[in-house]
View: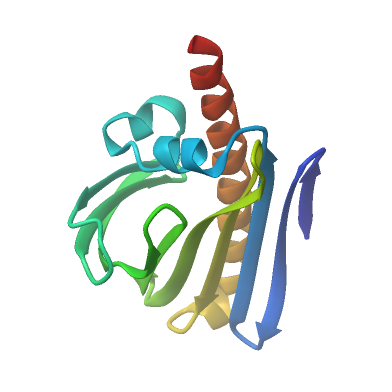
Length: 163
């Protein structure tokens, strides 16, 4: 299954019996540092998107953070240890999130050139109840990532227009 708009893509790929990879990206007309700045403006995150609402804690490699997500209208809080952290470029976590399924989620800002950036979200859903709920969960997460990516691009554009 895939979602496509002009410069964004989201898809789910089945890796194994109960192992799913979600890939979503969007091209944004702004330098990477501006995209990173909006993405990591934790104080205003919930102002511009409806799924990833908050991140608090120690935003460094190995840092302990607490995230808040809204999924199917329900707010859920998760504790994570940040991994794959490169300041100004990427961060992620890999922890159980729902019915014992594990979420390996990476956010990455990749400059295309001096004025354009490709924002990526990759995710993997596996373990726990993924043999029963994995495909459904992966499709739901894919749609959430696609919406988040479009909201991020719109917020970057809005902030650029203000300056």
